[in-house]
Length: 306
Image (cartoon, rainbow, N blue to C red; front, top):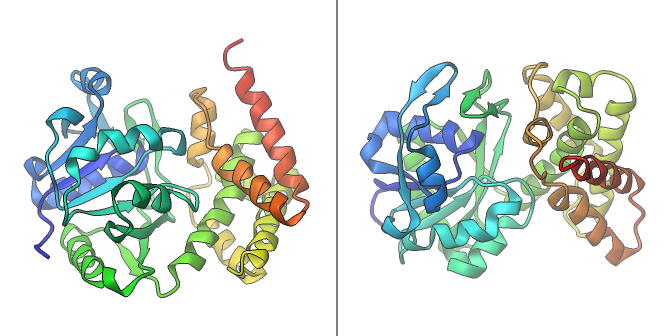
């Protein structure tokens, strides 16, 4: 498999810009394109993106002009994934590898069903405190990727991506049990993302003793219980480790779901509480904290159009 030299990113949110900046710095603007629908291409034409206050230029191409690349990074919200698959279709060839830095536990399966499961590596983006409001991205913690495979036939693709990440200076860890790590990230997002949105809180506020912190831990423990039924077997130790990661983030920052609330955009509550509730229902497992968060966030979203 040839070296990764041409990259496409779908999604110009916080993570898309975060990784896009490093890739451009390492291999040049001409070798990275953001692929978007025509409406977004027009919208971005006269826009200046900034990262930590510094103006950045990126190549943005409409999906119908996109060509096959070596690596596609999917960095959209859950609600936009279906459209993203159509947007990126011209970028995917036989040897293209795909990584998803989306939240949740299902995007790899959805992408793999469309383009071939052998092309999709399991990836988690964690420990960054990137906040994007409008066209401005700010962060103090860059974070890292956790990456792994389920099938040994993907080993060559994994090695190729690892070499690329080293070349573009994106921190990473190769995980032996990537599914356990994927569920761990899902657990912490079910807790921190939904709590910060429901309580209109920053990281610091959500992690301080009180109702928000109790809610966050309660939502995470419901994922632990669910993982036991799914034989993933998260533990209280996983919860504690992720809380320590959260404590290292900027206390004034906030996760993507809170940013959606501030901008009055639809959130990823279906991917978080919605997934927990539907999976728990299969086992007759009560999830009252996620039920409460789901109801509260849906009520908040319903007020956006009033």
